[in-house]
Length: 261
Ligand code: 48F
Image (tube, rainbow, N blue to C red):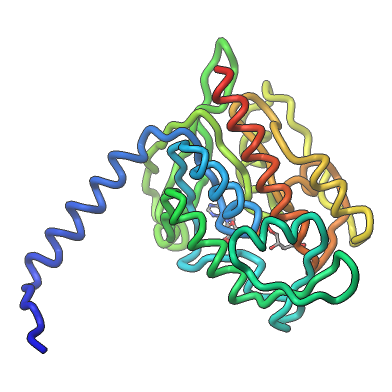
């Protein structure tokens, strides 16, 4: 076997060339999703599948958010109907625990959800933290986000971000609802109040998260555990049906809103 010789200069040149091609393309996106947890990746899958230019920014260098940790590091999570239909669509194997209740391997769930969203056309970029939104007046709306390298944030260096525009921004950042929290604090005119998440009550929390998913302000949407934080709902622990159903619901609402506009 003869291995093609590529020198360091070319390696660097191609990395920069194709990275900047991607960045130029995403600078004006249809949808920005913040967070590669179960709700964000499910939303990315359905949005990209509908043909929308979808970029997902993830603070960490990995996929999955809270999936990988399973339940107290045990490598299974629970899925209930009708979320099992979404997992089956993505080729994720389920083991039946009882009628309409299944156990799923965390590694398979993360990997196949990420790969389905990427195959559908969503662009995932890791190591990026979203630390603010862009807004417009008349009409008042969220029009994108400010992004910074996570490494720069961790260093506390004073570095300005760059901005990415979009018709819709999805906060899928999990328990802290980071994007909506910053918008609520810096843009009181959006009138977003944040009561904070409640302690666990799994039986009711799943339905309430799905019901509460959607638009928070013009251009700004909530999915997954961010919904609990901004609506004062209980947490539910390692049952994830509502996370994927929330991701699908927010995607459907955005597809509808963008097609109407
Ligand atoms: O926390 P996470 O998995 O969010 P989710 O989709 O799912 C929640 C469940 O995992 C679990 C649960 C279910 O019962 O309680 O916790 O709501 O994933 C959120 C992702 O967002 C990233 C973070 O690293 C994680 O991977 N993230 C958080 N803040 C930012 C961010 C930010 N400001 N910029 C970029 N990424």
